Length: 316
Image 1 (cartoon, helix red, strand yellow):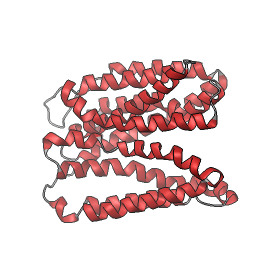
Image 2 (cartoon, helix red, strand yellow):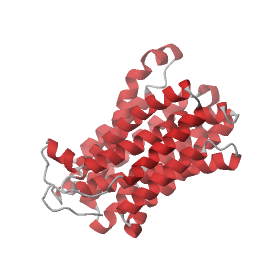
Image 3 (cartoon, one colour):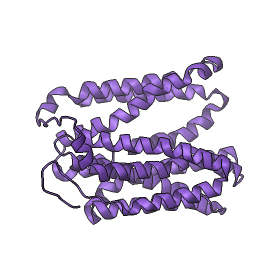
């Protein structure tokens, strides 16, 4: 039953966002504690929606539907730049605005996703064992790799362009807005997968992510903004691809595959951020970004073989 689950997810995100609108002393004291419900909400929602897609869309449209789930991130990033500039020094009130938007989405999900509609198709529940993780090892490795290599961009790209390329704060906001807007294009992942297959689509996405990371080391203004555009497209593209991959790996329980993939992606991003911080502080920004782009390319050779729970092996 996805409707109550999605409602709790949206409420968690709304509450987490709202807690950022605090006075300065209170904010500095408890902001870390209230990032938890916000992070939980964003982590929960993709698996839940993948299950909704599987239960409410025909099989020929499911891949396309799944790849549009995470484009909401891009719409959010696209809005943050103008909203941050509009609120200026009163930036904490921008969190109230986004919390209101999240609550409206919560109401819309409760209204449009009805419990009775979820009983049309029932899915077998996969008991959690170690064997499914072994079967999903290629998905786990690829997700971890993309998360690890992309972490440096999410964490240090804006500080890179201001510290090394001398861009102003407003220019860095424009850079971030371009990245967010471009991510909407990544929603076409489902169409690309249908056209050239899962494996070639995965390789294309990895190449784009690595190219975007390397592109930020080039000092030309056009290269910097192309890097932002390329990263926005490729990261959301890869998120959509992992959702499709996860649902194919666990066709009887799509949310299981998506959860495993996104958990691996998150672990990779956490490890990547720590490693990137050490390299940036210990050596330099350009060295760290070039190294991470090379690391990303290493995962180009990861297999995308689907290993179902049955004895048959199906390759994409």
